[in-house]
Length: 590
Image 1 (cartoon, rainbow, N blue to C red):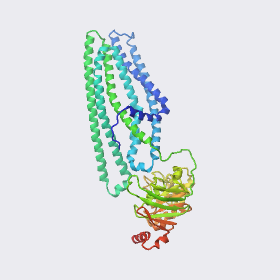
Image 2 (image 1 turned 30 degrees about the vertical axis):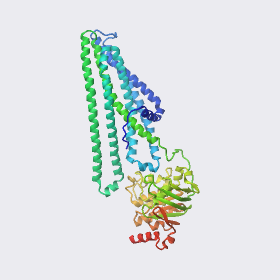
Image 3 (image 1 turned 90 degrees about the vertical axis):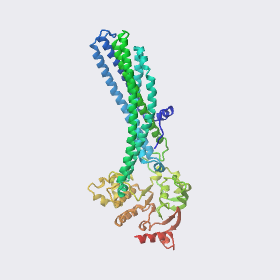
Image 4 (image 1 turned 120 degrees about the vertical axis):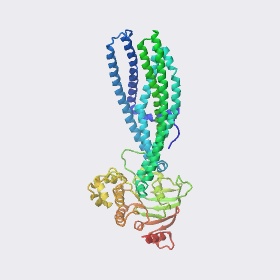
């Protein structure tokens, strides 16, 4: 999490101004909202003057030559006009913030979802979620409320000072002597308040991270009976946030005490000084009445500006965090127009590929890996955990780039292909199937979003999923639950296979697709996989012989290198071979 303290500077304002491009399409509403805001604030400043003149008129010393009864209509007219201005100002700013921030949310989500895999490995999901929620909401509040209120208070402050300086210059000078003290104190307190506010925001984001992690991994929580541990962890995080919040509240409370004390002390002093001027005949009582109201309004504006400054500083900090994401390059450039993807043949070649993960550069995961997968053939990789099997899949999917060597597709370097079109030719059926929380139909259709109901039905049939789907009362409209928890492992696996069948890939990757299934489910899934692998290039990672026995070539990985290669019969016939030892070990444990 970012912990640096944000403050308003010209550089930060300039960087934050780039967010204005989301508001620009609605700038007409924004400008009219500002115009109505200034007009409404100016109209509001007529109230104290009219109230003072009404008091003077009541004692026969009015200067506006207006009958006392007409003041009621004046106040009524001001209220009606100001109400109309406030309504349109509010709706215009709401339109700007809602539509502009909606565009921002879309762009931010698109930028996040199109990042490379390594970005998600280095950023926690809760942190990214906080950018989409807390930071964007803070920015929306700034556009819809804070900025408008800040400008309104400035208009009130400047207008009020000009009016009292013109009406009663002696009393205005007395009042303005307190102004520098209040401003300097506001700046001092504001810096400390912003620091505490930022720390509280980070603490809140940490609590959200704990919630998301525990709920996403709730099966592990249940399996290890760590409910108490997670509750304690969350409670400690909440307690830390409460401590910061209370410290934040106390500092703000001291700030308010100071402002109120200074303001009211100055107000009482000015009231006494004005009363002396009225007694001496140098000032009318109505003018004193107006001056006191103006002084209170100006004091309230000064006090409000401190809080609004803090809120704007927080919004600028949120803008910078959002802009950091928006400035990142995308792994995939989305093209929202419908276009047919380039169909690959499915001829894969790894040539002397070496690789280390960016997070562990000192560990060589793959060393001089070379193999070929011809169109329509099946190859399999076996080996102990950590041998590099899944890394080969990630390199083929172009989640990472090899450090040495090259990967070819149909005789061309994989970098020559558009990444989105390249991956659209590959489907993977992993060991752990993560389904979305919608219906079975929606999960199958994920392989081809524009698929017809007939295509979905055919894919379910080929994956041996149709029978169990029809056994549900809602059939294809059955809700699978979060991550597919309402389905068994075999059912989830067949849904994933149906999804892959619907995608109709040129290359199929099976990553331990049957390793966690019972014998009956494995038979159904294996039959579905045989249908799926027919006439397409298939790369299989597996331990079970039922999955790899029919492979055209089996590669045995050991510590990132290919130790053996050949068909099942060729490898099993080798004396003291690694593959033979793995098979015998599996047969002993069966």
